[in-house]
Image 1 (cartoon, rainbow, N blue to C red):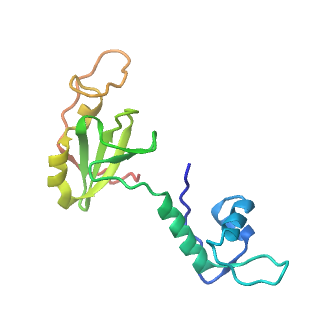
Image 2: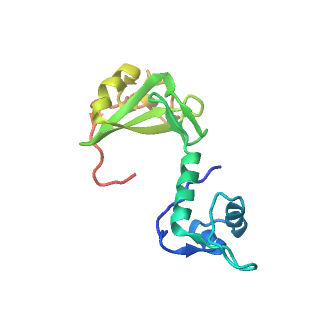
Image 3: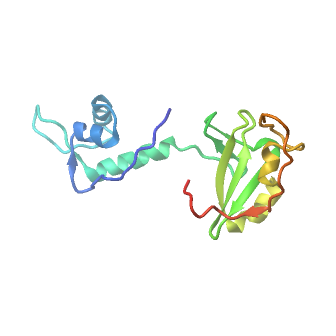
Length: 175
């Protein structure tokens, strides 16, 4: 599985050895050495037998390039499924949406795994979202009579509560 590396704690003015790079990004020393030996990560000239050093600025550019290379591009009407690791159009083109002051958070179900997928859009894109998808209350995505994906319940089937079309974010919790 591809990894994304955090640039937090990296100083562009310092020099880093392969061991420093391994500790900083929680990778094996051999991986850091491979990055250096590949030539993609420029080094400061060192004397023969000495360890190669890398400027923090060059390391930062290299890591940003690595992170960009690992990103999966999705189309406007696709969400990224964290379970099957593929961009997917939501099941039945149905989505539920939650809105706050700056953006819209959308929830849809993966066609393959039937697991939730999330995506964010700006408020100005609500018209395009309503053209591309059928916007339904969150309960209709899962466990109503008209739902596309049933969640197994123990005991009696409950009738879904009707929810407003646009729900505010829960201000107390973070994702």
